[in-house]
Image (cartoon, rainbow, N blue to C red; front, side):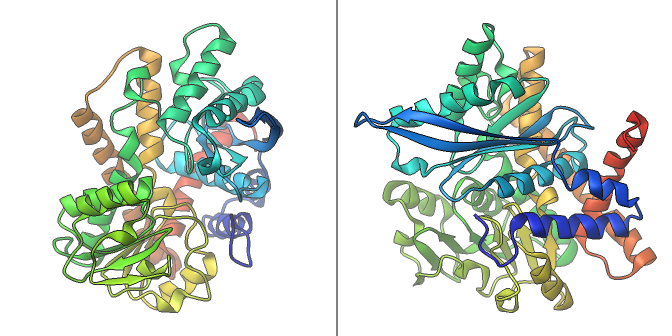
Length: 422
């Protein structure tokens, strides 16, 4: 899925190397974290509706277990690669550590355009994924959840297949499930909600106020749509939205709920009656706005287009949407980037809530869960902000990403030393 000259894994390792040097950790830590503990490749045969057999390539990467069982989503996308999966699993290790969760990092994927499958074919593929990786999955070993191209229904099929194979109820083996199967009521919108909370905190810190600040959203899938919805509820004026159909722009503000309805009914937000429409799916990143949110895929803001960003604040709702070269350009121009491992951690934090409730056979209400998630996001943002200020005094030119990664690595390094790994 990488689209820049440097791959997502190469960019991830550049950031990892920089943070290890900045935090003055031993080079051995880089050697350990630059490789996953386990990477499994499987072929999943599926009988299609016309009777033929298609075989889909699938992956499960388990990056680091020093802090606990592996945790990370399963992505269905036609352009995923094993290298991408390794990068995403590495990011999950760092994200889980920064969020103070008892997890290591994992990630899974299937090379498939899930939109081309019938419901029956999608179910067979989902169940086949569990059968292929069952020996390395489990509620205390590796707990998958949803990612791009998967949703609560896919998780429902997967957890059901896992229960059949284990011959016992095991709701904690997958997260992001429907509420009726033990899922958390906030999980569906948790990543976007968490992004909105961080966007508000960042605007107050770096722009002086969040009220009536203008916000542009690139990507209107699960993350971007809920990011826009909750940010609008928190006082932001959403003025641009991009999805696969293009970009809409209206300086007077977009009715997010109406845009959501139109996108659901027509397949694209481009059918919203905005003041301006663009064919460019990245255009939302380059409009005149106080804040832009990169909520689509990796490598969206690159060396080639970073100069076109007009906002003073960039929120990474997706994983790795800003390349290291682009971030250097943005930083030199006075643009602040809120890193992915901080901004989009709401999904995995709420997955942790769901997992903990499943293990305890207990449940919380939606309002309580949202309140807990807000506290987590606020605590993590403030911790990174204070660490950034300290590092700036000690080292000079550092970014919020540097502060977040160093903070995450400190916990990982301490755990490795205590276990005798290093």
